[in-house]
Image 1 (tube, rainbow, N blue to C red):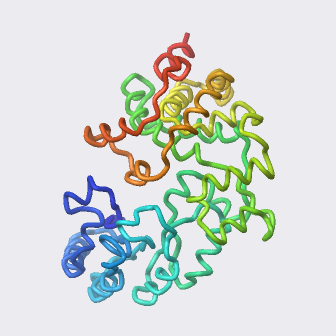
Image 2 (tube, one colour):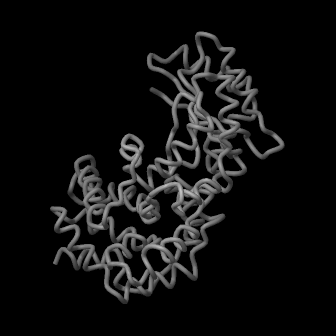
Image 3 (tube, one colour):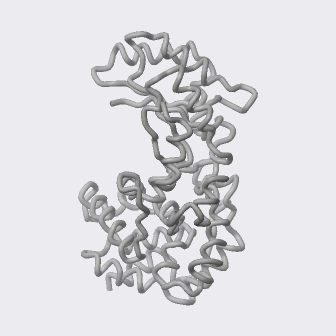
Length: 345
């Protein structure tokens, strides 16, 4: 099917009248969808937010009514992200509003703040009449969330087990782009982006209703609770970050240059065992200590990340903006090209 994404809030889209800017005029959006449905041999769906700007311009009900009035030319379904465009990803998604919206447009899918199977259950309990739940960033961080929902059980993979999953993804990139230099360039255009999300994975076992993560999730989305989660892990489960196994520490490094190095090491490996060996060689104590200190001192998880959260951009203007906020390092150990050359020698 074709999905018309009217939920994207990033400036590169909205300044062109795309993304959430399409929500400004419900009747105009309805005419657009009407034409798409009439002219398309496959189903058309639409993703929207609660507002094209802030709380003062909330118009999701008007948008859904306009789409419902299209009759036979309605979209196959509508996905509602429970935030305004201006909220981007900063505030909890409003699942009460999603529930209300499902009464207006019954073929409604809810979206926002689903990182664990128990949060999924909470969302479906809050909005029981929604057709389904769409999971975006949660699946980028926790790709096995769908199995967890199916089994209603948290999977807590070791670093080695996660590397096996990431190596499988690297293999699929090679199958798609090729394993030559051109394929390598194509893979590296996309693959490191995923480690910005993979590095946020944490073992969020629900245990029982008294578990700290279950209690935290009842009050605040876990996807917005990185610092609290790390504090809980350190206090109750894992101890200081420096006491974790080197591979586990490596996979949690939130530094772009290391994400590139990890992606290259996985791309250059010919087996899971070789991938683990390659990453073991990256996880030296000096490298880990230096990067963890630099990340702690320099990483800003608010405005710079929020602008492009969940989006990969290669435009020159975006790259310039990213370079201003990028954590830089002078360690040769984390220079992606040098590491790749060393691993292949």
